[in-house]
Length: 186
Image 1 (cartoon, rainbow, N blue to C red):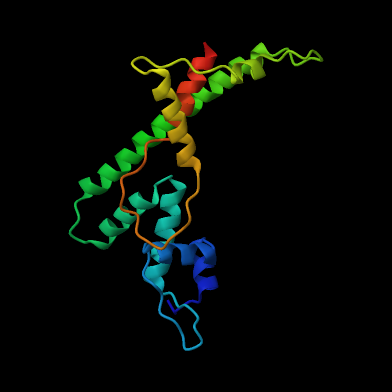
Image 2 (cartoon, one colour):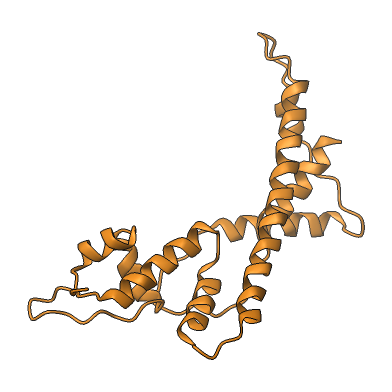
């Protein structure tokens, strides 16, 4: 394979040039060598890495997990159980998110069924959404508020800085919202 410019590499890997620059800034792929005119050049290995990242993202792996998987992919002496461990953790995370989505859907279906959807001003959906959540077993109101604050904080975007992702994954921001949804469904 000949060397490709960023647009050609993006097309070959199924990503955008912007994502290639982003992955470089995160250190997921090595910084590309440049021509005298400053154009980035990518070879077969880099295109394969970009495909690897794209396909990993389509399975919902976090950037931290992808960094770990890429490291294992580059290491010929890796053990498959390490790779399987990362994949199993992702599978468990997806199953938990699915349970949370199923609970949210069930709660929303319940709310919709309680609303007459006519010309009256009363709406059970709005009433339930304004209802404070019931504390979970072992949690007081302060902990429930903190969980919601944590969930909201997890949704905020932070300024991007070029760095490697090394911190452990944050707890799902959906957990507090799911707990709240469960409390209004009853």
